[in-house]
Length: 167
Image 1 (cartoon, rainbow, N blue to C red):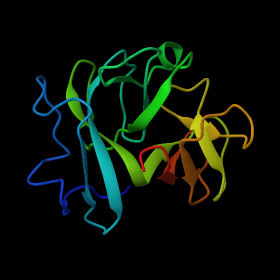
Image 2: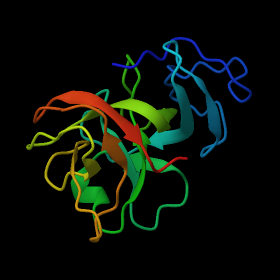
Image 3: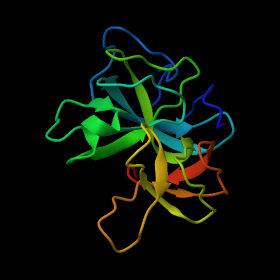
Image 4: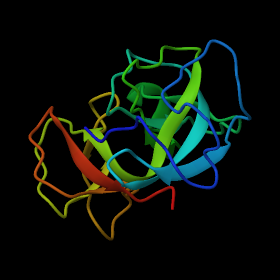
């Protein structure tokens, strides 16, 4: 996993991106950027976690159809029709439904892959059957590309991908 312990950069200013809270501490939708402890550049967005199956690190989250308040879900049944990709859960202490925290929206992130493995260079989209997972996308079609695998990732495993929707 990419370490998220220490941040530098103009927009992080003392924010603990690992923190998950029952009440909002920042404006929903707020974006911060900086470098992870490993020196990777990254961007993060503040959201409310809703309509969830149990969140795990590596889960991809989306806005549901018509959602405008930065309330996100990892539940595919609630998000696929008209979904808008947002980012990846990364916290060591993962959020629960109804809490507030940060999701990674750009940079190298650890993502969960669904029922079929991917190889380095594959473009990724939301998996239509596994909550919070990504799957290989088809370029030139109707798939919404959210990341690109930077290593081979086995099915139902986590691995590194470059997020493409938050740049």
